[in-house]
Image (tube, rainbow, N blue to C red; front, side):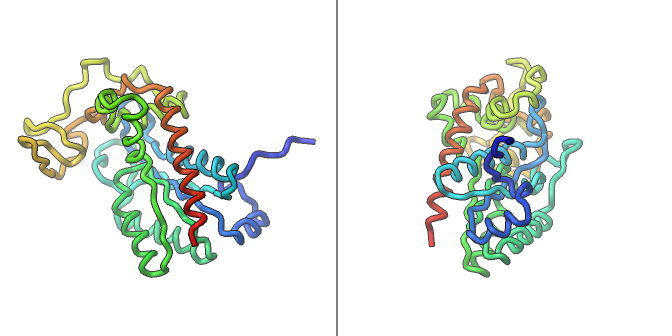
Length: 272
């Protein structure tokens, strides 16, 4: 007799009869979202792989600890922001991203599936997630929280690698995504394509320093500018040094994100 299959947490793998039984219990449902954009010369453009994998790890941990949790199919295309100039990138307009979220929420809420959590892996998604979840709260009285993975990870990095190194490694094209990729999907990274140490120019525009995508530093003040990323950093790397990333850091981040996510699933499921 074949060994029993592992716990199913991906909604797409659950059969029709299994679904009718499972969803009658109103399990926690994780909705992973990411993007398909330039993540640096060494990293795959599909960062949604990471959001999907971490959501699966959270669901497996939460289920093993007693909170039944499943993962919806990942939404791979994020809301467009600063990366439209990248060949091969695919992003959604605000109206399209909002319509997709509205429809996903409506389909699940129709069947009284109310324990929904967005697992977000793209900064550009934050405004549309906020608006869509706020609309559900106003219209249906259902609270849908969102966990922005990379914001959480930025907060974890100083505890993992120290404050000084965290500052040096944190940015687009570096950590947390590169270390997580090195741990979870090492075969998908091309570390040989990283710019050599010292070859990466400091991101600037108009003689002003980079303050984050869409912002420059003028005498210590942040000035918002309608620029796409290639005007500041053509290779997709922000201020962080990807050479400081490591699989060990990625493993620590993955474990802590999983533990936090599973713990929140348990807490959220217990709410009335």
